[in-house]
Length: 443
Ligand SMILES: Nc1ncnc2c1ncn2[C@@H]1O[C@H](COP(=O)(O)OP(=O)(O)OP(=O)(O)O)[C@@H](O)[C@H]1O
Ligand SMILES: [Mg+2]
Image (cartoon, rainbow, N blue to C red; front, top):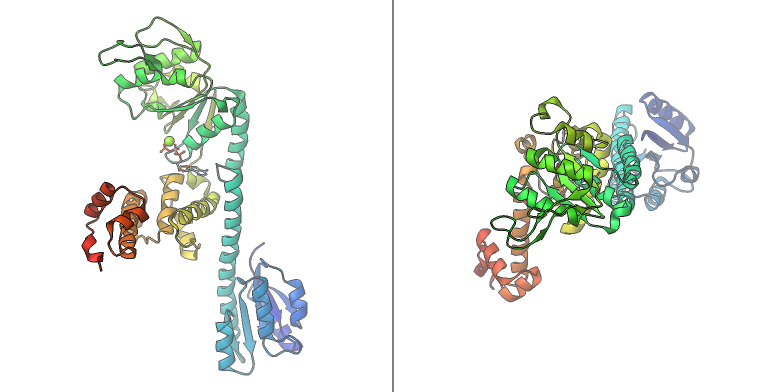
């Protein structure tokens, strides 16, 4: 429902008709009433519009009407009209929460402008409410938030694929949720009792990656003092998550392919073959099937992994999820930091919807955290990566917590570290790093 309804209440038939006509011409949907009680019967919480009412009316007057409306829904803007230019009453009405006060006679444009602003405000209030509700319910039921059709489909596919027990390739830009998806494939499968074992192929040097994957016997190579169970074996019965598989060395790719085909491993330094009950979920930031990848990624391994590919679209291609995700992360952040709930203002909303989110959901989550901490971005910083200043923000927040604790305990070391719940040494390290002078707090 679009938020453009105006309930117009005036006991004067001529004025009511004239005003209704003007407001309809201005593009609003007007619902006229001759008295407050009939209007009250029509209105309910979350009404998609605003109320304009005359003040002087028999029975229930405009002020009493406004009071009752506030009880019903305190985010509903009420505009009062009076013919008696009673400034004192105007002030007290505004004080009590009326949105605006318009004295007769007034130019039509004055009323239209005020209604327009009130409707914008109302739309935001309703959107905030709806997002909060959606965020609350999605937290309970969904670890993968999103109401866009692509996300609905993604969840459906995940449920089917999770149970099918095939190897899966997850494709998506940075921060789109590949790890979340991998985790769900595990949790939603019969393998959930087994281990979920993750290995980041990009983070390990070539020499380490093979012994990590396949394990080794004691003495298999210099430095291999003890026997080591490989990740593949450890994941047997569960799920092996190979992150950033595009970075896997070519020589390892050959060996992995063999494991995928035979479902057996041979730890380094043994001649043994051990059977493994494996499901491999691999994630890649690039399209492994593209010709540019030919030189660094084996085509046969690609086809082996590509039985099922799950593509997660970047956030800019599912913009309708941005506000919902933001509401979720902002709620979580303000709960964690103990800060005021974040209100979605018109500026914030525009900014969220305009940004391209190259860092996808992760970037959005970090931005929500900074917003919850009340950190305002200066304009130029906005163009740079939003990601870069999160550590700074956390630093500042930490320093503030320490200062507050020192203040509260008059600089007494013991009670301050007790309140902060950190070891003494950490406390002194942090004082030094943040350049905080404890003695300044001693009274
Ligand atoms: N749909 C979603 N709902 C809720 N949280 C999400 C969603 N998608 C991503 N996240 C959160 O965003 C962050 C980034 O997600 P994740 O680590 O899964 O991304 P990724 O694709 O693995 O990124 P990278 O390629 O950089 O490793 C995580 O904190 C994750 O919990
Ligand atoms: Mg990841």
